[in-house]
Length: 143
Image 1 (cartoon, rainbow, N blue to C red):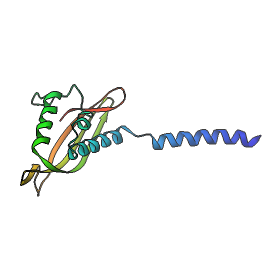
Image 2: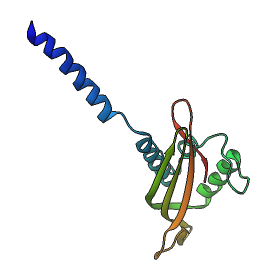
Image 3: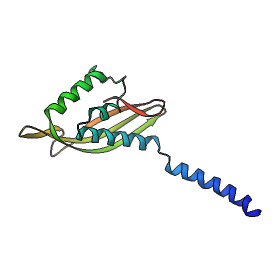
Image 4: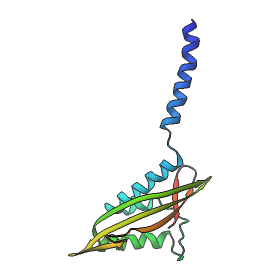
C-alpha cells in the first residue's frame, strides 16, 4: 500500500520530465524548418518548400508568396545539382515572432556550368529570415 503512494508521484514526476525533455522548443522547431527547407531546395520539392512559407510572406522588395513560388519554379527548371552549406548564427524568439541569422553557400549547376548562387569559396552569404508563429507551427514571413 505504501509503495503505491510513492509510485504514483514518482510516475507523474517521470512523465513530466519525459515531456519536458522530449517536447521540442521553439528554437528546435525553427531549426527543423530551416533544415527541411534546405532539403526541399536540394531535392527541388516546391511543395515541401512552400509549405514552410506563410501566405503573408513579403520581403523588402515587395515580393509575395506567389512571386516566390514562381521564382523557385523557374530556378528549379534552370538549375540542377544544388548543394547548400548553411550555419545558423543566431536565433531570437519573441512570443509569436522569431528572427534567424544564417551564413550560407549555395552551389548549383546550369548545363555544364557550375557556380555559386550565394557566397563564394572564401566567404559565405549572410541571410536573415523572419518567422511568425501560427496556431500550430512556425512559418517564414520574410527573407
